[in-house]
Image (cartoon, rainbow, N blue to C red; front, side):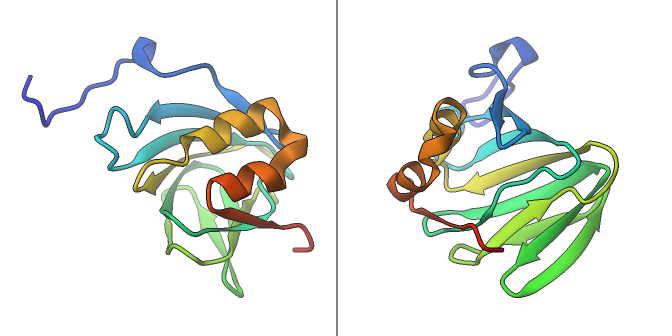
Length: 145
């Protein structure tokens, strides 16, 4: 296998799935594995699930909806993204996703560049410290949206 090719088998994934705000996140690829290029995650979002609105100041974020339907806030606009939809959020844009449907939604999402991995790990361990943890990773949360 060449140095540019990356294959991560299911047993090679880092850590166990993390619960954050009711969502379940499983790491697919870390910045260490992608030379800092991106961080890739799988998510199951239950009905009513999703994070509060937030802004990332260091990364672009993108989402691919695999199953179900999610509602995204992007800036001042809200859009519905069904299975098969792709959503890209530029750095510095207030956003969130929410599952307003009756069944679990599933998606793959990634950040570029990598570096925000610790936020998910820390939030899984200390969700009550969301503001403090977010600040360390250049992320601000808004709880009134």
